[in-house]
Each structure stands twice: as structure tokens, then as C-alpha cells.
Amino acid sequence: MNHIPAPAPAPTGPASATLTALPYEVPECANARIALFAMRRMGANGLADARAAHALFTAFGEAFRRPLTLLRSLMADMAANAAQPIAIAPCCCARMTPSERALVTILSRVETRSDHARLLMQDLLGQRRIDGVLASAAAVAVAFADEGRPITV
Image (cartoon, rainbow, N blue to C red):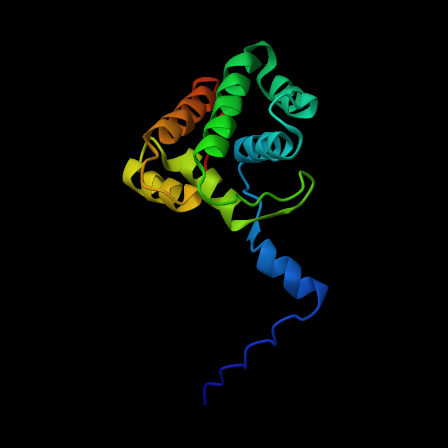
């Protein structure tokens, strides 16, 4: 007779709150983790965050300016166009918020599945008109790919 085990009880207390707020693990793709780290730093400390710039300098070497400038533009565009809050986790956190997951997925799919990326961006920003922000996301994805660091999930 086949026995189907009962599901494990849901965690309670602080562990439950963490899993609810941060339901996703960070991506395995190192390039996606670099972008996520820089976005978290800029989201928490401003567009001129030195650690975000250093992370991109370390990853891209002398070619860091283009990805950094475009990532700053994307963050500014999202802040200016968001109709709802975009939740970010601390930069050292090994888990992601739903908003961060959507953003990393957008960056990985904006060129290959633009219709999917468009819907995710609309949900993330809470509005329909997202063409400018989506163009900024595409520019970031292309900048990473052009330097041999495509973002994948």
C-alpha cells in the first residue's frame, strides 16, 4: 500500500515571518547576484552607493561604468514610476523578496520573453505604462551580456 506522508507543519515564530517576507532563495547565477547586490545597496543607500559601484568595478573591471550607469538609471526610473512600494531585503540576505525575484526575472527575460517581462514589470510597479522602465531594464541586461555576464535565473 502506498503511503503518502503528511505534510510537515508550517514553521511558526520568526522563521515563519522570514519565509513569508523572503520566500525566494537568491539566484544561482553569479551575475544575477551581482545585480541584486547593487540594486539592494542603491535602494537602501542611494544611487551613489560606493559599495554598489565597487561590486560592479570588481565584476566588470575597467568596463564597469556602463553597467553601473544603466543600473542607476533603472533604479531611478523604478523609483519615479512605481505606484506602490518595492520591497528589498538587506544586501547580505540569502533570500529574496517577491519584488526582487520579479526584478531579477525581468532582467533575465527582457530580451527573450519581453511579453513576460512586461507583465512582471507592470505588476512590480503597479501601473500599465512601463515602457521607459522596461527599456532601462533591457539596457541593463544588454550591458551585462555585452561584457560576458548575462543575467539568468
